[in-house]
Length: 262
Image (cartoon, rainbow, N blue to C red; front, top):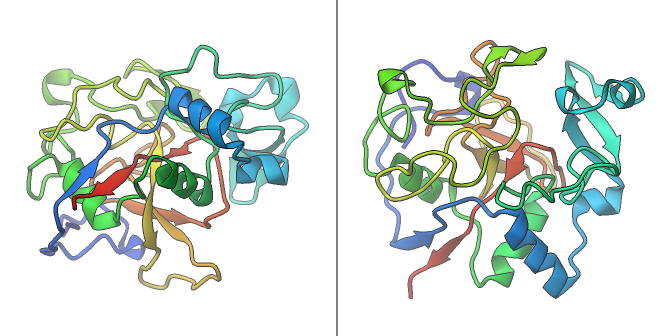
């Protein structure tokens, strides 16, 4: 896992490339969808962190201009807006829903929410090493789950931000925003969308060069999302990594579940 190819972000701790052993495990071929999360909430009454806090982060390009004008931006990343009433069931705020996104990945879920769902289905969140092993699909040292060339033969194989970030997503890969959990061909292990689409929570506490130690610790996220763009975030690679605090949520973060093999 990891990389030495120099295209990443040194502060993220992607390198060096190294051998890591993982025990056999099972992992979802797809990120958890809105349909599956709806079943979980219906069965358990789970209240997400975003629902408890009353708000979550939404990409400004997905908001009505009048709504965007009334929201607070994040210092340094003004395209993220604090939207009251934004939750997994209302991704862009109270007037939105997921009725036409049942097969899209659930978003606005925190690490706590993801871990609760995983426990409900008898599983757990994957470790970073497990996630990366599975995401590689049997390839070694490649940047993407399908090889080193981003668009082989001109084919789009993942969902990222294409165009001029953050002003205009051309949707050249077929999507502006989330895509269905099986939107693109699977990798060699049968996993869909391990890069792009949504960041995916992992079990691990975050560790990286110059990382600030938080209490509780931040958690690892892998895979990048539909908002990744070469101009500022080329983390739609299997070695790429990021983090967030365990109670944080946003419109581009989801998860998939792993299980131990007895």
